[in-house]
Image (cartoon, rainbow, N blue to C red):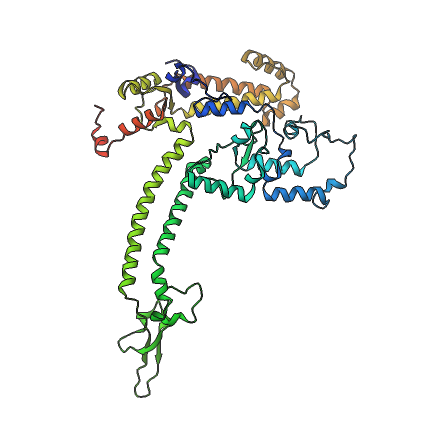
Length: 504
């Protein structure tokens, strides 16, 4: 093993993938879109050759709050005080000649630090919608070669257009493909995610947990709706004449429930106050004229809630809930796989070994192990071995901090190599006055920093010579199928772990 300090942090290798050696797939349509989804998105992105000006967004694509703000800032000075200010060419603020030109918003974001610009509510709202709020790539606008969604007809906008597309998806089974855009995407047209019409299969764009949450919420809502419909016969019976005389005096939201209004106080000689500690309003006492003991009265309901119809409906509801929750659990597992496949991340192709042998620090050895023991279709693309080298990492961080302090303390362009720093520190130390020497005792100067840097360099070299044990191994494969195959084969029971059974 080499003694380079960086190699002591983690040993990693990058290996060529088998797919890189295959020929490129042929393009099929006039836009140069390849059959693979990734190539299709790249070719579409190439059609947009200019930056999109966020200040020129169509009003139909804005949020309602932004539309209100744009209207107010153009009409009323109490909302936008700049309406009352006169433009002054000699002002310290740099004016923009044409804010409607393409890319003006983006140029203002990359303005030089010494150039100042007037605060703009319009740009603030544009920043909020294009950077803060989540957006997706609008492929329909890109196909027509425009940077906005103006190519769509007015019939596809607004509530009616969204409703029409939702019905079409429901009937034809067609789902819109929504690719999450990067914050501030200005080379490809984007649109805001709709809080009402975003397809459920696209909720994974916001994270696996968010997608599963809304999937479970919709499933449980449908299950509760079916259970409610199943209990309609019971609700009709409870609200009718045969149960509690139409439940007179009951709140409208409680009608149809099992609330009983046919009640009467009856004597109960065997009852006690302690029996009704949780419901004290259903018991009362009265003084007896003939004896010293108080008479006890309790509330008795005359409603018949033990009908066979009620029992069967309640039992059917219980069975439906049990079966429904089981099916929801299976559905969530399937959706988890779909969300995971829809969002391609490094996690989909990688595994982590949390308890590797302490001396297994060679990435080549790990690559050989996976490539030869799990089939010919398994190819290791990247392997990284993490080591328990906290002391070395802390020393390297301290070294970087010292170099940064020296960079700030020395004139620009000063070399930071060790011989040059030693010469500079010796010259500065010889020229110090008595006051500067006293000050250096409290606030380290360049000579003191160079001295500390020399000591930390020696510590780094000594720590780099140590053989730190492996703590984690991160392995990335070429395909998801290979990752899942290895996870399945390596999933063994606790008994096999205790017996330390090896692979056969």
